[in-house]
Image (cartoon, rainbow, N blue to C red; front, side, top):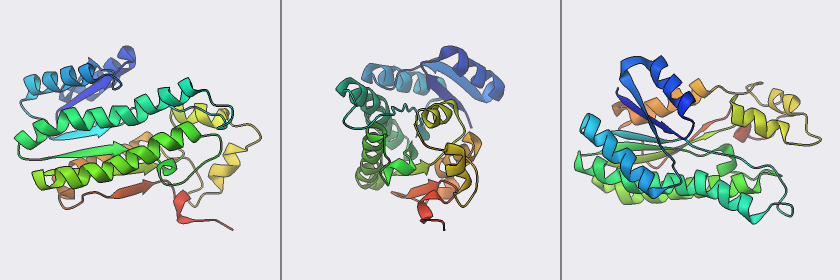
Length: 222
């Protein structure tokens, strides 16, 4: 597969693209801006001629209670996590339709299916991603574009580590140890699911939600 990576952290983005070798390229891309999406799609089409799959993965988090949350913090999370996904689908879907079909994979969260204290901004954004994924599946499916969502929980990334450290009076190590898997997940485990959903092997999977959460959403563990 030929992959075009987009991010606002240019040094890290270029580093990842170089590690992947000739199959990947990097461009500066801000998912919050529609013009950036237009340029991103145009560049991918100019370079490769078509777009077969999109993974909407950009995300930020804010830890605070609803009462203590500033409106600007809520809007910042929504702009990246929800508006970014909306714009990505809006700008990419026409190219997929023109090519005869494609696959969109939206990274939601376990918090896109259940609430969590102190994560009101994040929960609101990810419930939005879950809902808009289902709507897009209904709208785009008849035109050959599959749309699915992945719902991770407790992934060992800088964002995940940062959010865990923001909780007061919560033993995060004990929390993850108590999940059925007994540990945090890895970014590679999420990537494997995204690659599968983007592939032709998942041709009949559409409008679905995939929990990659170590069993967290299975229920209470006694």
